[in-house]
Image 1 (cartoon, one colour):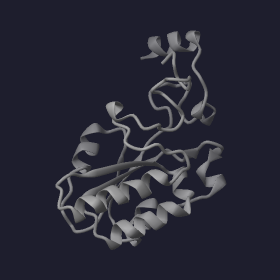
Image 2: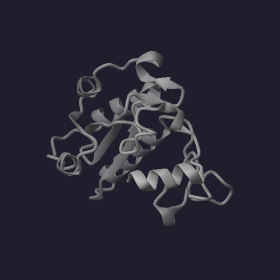
Image 3: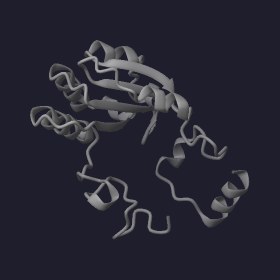
Image 4: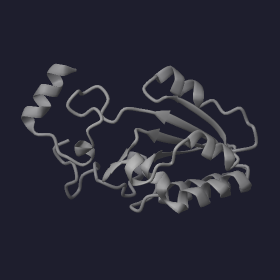
Length: 179
């Protein structure tokens, strides 16, 4: 944690390719990860490979047009080897989603794009696990995981100031006591 967002750190603001850490692509602009994921899932289909592709999105990221182009492609190519998990915490970097661009019912939106879609409590490990089971319905799966930003730490819960803040030693000590 001491190297967070420092040169040479594995904990950067946006992923930098590092296959040893499981990061296969460098990304920066929101929406890029889903487009890359669609390409990986499509390549697996074409090469008749049996692996799955998982992409995690923030709900604020769903404001990007490239997300919906990618979802249309995933549905069109019947990418049932792909699972998209949307962290629905109702915030993005600059504020509440409802104030910036309210996407309303994400489950219905993804469903209307041709995806098998479920909505779950994103803090319930058993529900997360169960929702990851793909029923091979010839379409991509989307899991809308409703979460509370900063859940588990009262200081952080639903406080968007912590989207990009750094924890001091004294705050860290108080968090450990709370946990």
